[in-house]
Image 1 (cartoon, rainbow over the protein chains, first blue to last red):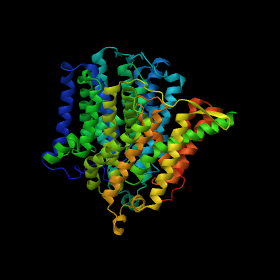
Image 2: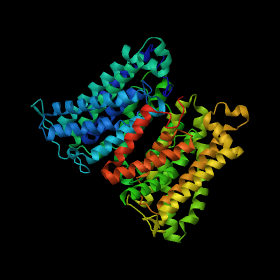
Image 3: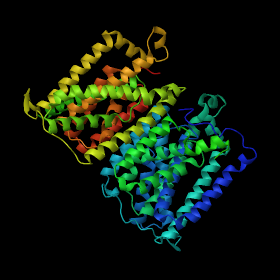
Image 4: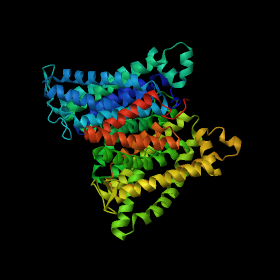
Length: 323
Length: 290
């Protein structure tokens, strides 16, 4: 699935372009500091969890060109693992999140080693089939709570000090997690490892002929993406104190594709922007009932047909900068 | 006799799967569009048949003709105005597949939203031809038998059209290689549109026939999409005989798993078979390696 993303960021940065990403990052941090004054913190935390999920997903589709249709597998099962650890085993929040993340990493390793053997449509179908299999497992398995999910997950005290039951403390915790993972992804994208990933996206055969073992790079990227999706899922489980079937359902895999596509595939900030827009839309249009689904579907189709670069992609392309 | 029952049930189930998968095979095999909104289209026609039956008293056997015609027209329009731009734009098969997956995925949400707005999230069904019929010592309802008979007749008809007519040969030529088909005078765009429209007509037929004995809700389209995809990929994309064999295998496996194993395992068994095929025989049971 090469050439899936616009190659807006291939140009070497010069002048103002060199500063576009740091400036946007500072703007993001300022927004996250100011936002709780205007927007309900739980909504912001939800948006941040999805933003992280979308960024993790983007690492795979935007920088390796692999379209996964089963990322809910990692998001949902990490939420289950985190919720189970926090509620049943009584783990503190930091360890619960680590448990969820580890679960996602293991699942990512298994799913990835099966999926990366195939390209294109078959890759998408294998990830979808695996996610669906695990969805039906979640439906049957005793510890997931079936239709009810795992409810009333305690947020606990972070490092035994900060009481996360307080909304603002939780918000700061989520912001820190998000920004840390965001910077990690940024670091990965521009590392030598990330450059190899982009080479694979552009032309896998050529990367192979240059002596890179592309399967190893693809598997590594897959596991990283799954692991970061796991961080998002675990955090989401603590924020909402709930892990449910919605998190492992295929619509979750679909929503993350939509967010990434809307914001801009293969852009650094795009997925986060897309996630904020979709979450905001779902929240503020909730009164319209089923129309949200219809509008979301229409946006999806229009994005694919007309704005293949996504919002951030279009801006970056118009201003000739990297974002 | 449980063995005979399971065998019979498996065959009719497999027939239904074949019916569901034939249209997707045309759309994906010939038009190269992986239509993820396929199941939603099936649900839409099933619910339309239900409305026609309960509100106007129109027999599903009548509405199947009407609905498949409407579906063919809508399918042709959809292909012409939403999908042709993607086909024109794409530089490679992979890119087209990614784009069409994404576009039809949006369409899935759209159709599902419309259906939910009209019908709500409840399970809906109606009763038509639900009379038991004795077949070699086991009973089966007439509507299931009818659906099976139509599936067999449609597959046979489709097979004859594909192998004995000029249009059918052109369709197969595009399915085998859209790049070289123009060299022998095939208008690929038009044939692909025909394939896509015929696929939507077939999915409407499947929806109406299944609606006679199944219960539907607006949100269960993806179940059918996945079933059809599993069958098409197992049988080999664009391979119609393989598609029917794969459907029967799947139906029999499901029926035997639920008779002799655990009914809750049928879905898992489904996906397990699918995964094995994807990993070991990605070109399908009867496909050639590419």
